[in-house]
Length: 441
Image (cartoon, rainbow, N blue to C red):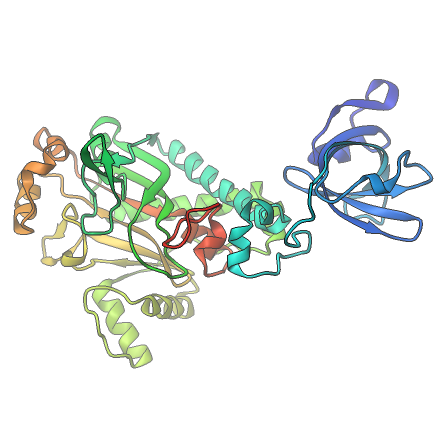
């Protein structure tokens, strides 16, 4: 317990520090989350930056009129911290004074201070600046902060260098029509679909690099799993012996993140009732074998031999969980025709690539693999695809002047977060979603 002269703490303290000040008078700030009026007293819930703090108002010790407070008022509170065995925290805050800093001009258009915001997805997103004030809604993004912190801490510990690549580019890394065009001072440019080209280039500089940043996809999908702007966690590493080195690195990264969240974000995990999955070992299966397994297990006709249907991802995950207990599964050796031009092909079967996806609870969250590092091999594959090689001179520069064997991956932060919460709509794990319908708020 901190003992301060005069038994009064003049500085404003954090909610997490209150237990250190039992028997003392403190100052704390926040917004009035909820007022529960009882007979002769009231519970005033104060929303601080991370926690909801329960305060007690009573005319016996509170030196102001409770009617001066409104929900969503911003306030400074002076209170006594009193030991209280009946409280979960072991203490209670008895409000002495309250200084109102601002008052809402209107009543909230939607109720946010219940356990959940009980409304439609449309309302949840239309009123996002307000609905995010709900303690569970905002906890999702505190947890997402923890995920990013975990990624960054792990990768820096593995001697990766964090980079920041341009989002205005001359060509799309993935190609195709799902790319946003823009007028760049009279020239045609695009929003980056991926940092792929740049992180490969930087392997030639730093050997191991990563980035956590937005990417853009002009896909006209209107589903619970697609966004037109999302956050991608990308890493690329050189001097690999196999694409399996990348899978091994991701497995270790996910193990680290689960431990990190448990240690550092237990408050949010408990609030959101998140059961962290075991990532001790992630099973893997070849794409073709996975398709056949799903077909056999569920007596389904294979309609697309080159890619998964969303339902097949869910069914495969169910089979893997039943057989191994794992919530994750690597699917490897995707068909070459479905992978980008820089994907390295298997020498034993050039119809397949040394690539993989990672499925988590029925949803693809990662795409990765080994890249072509040899200049002649890369140019030859581009010509086979009838690509204009001259347009990619700045990309091919790294191949021309020497690159080590390398590979990497991209993980969708929102998809990973939502499956960690065991829910289905990526918009729930996106602060301000951008999809085919929405560019506001």
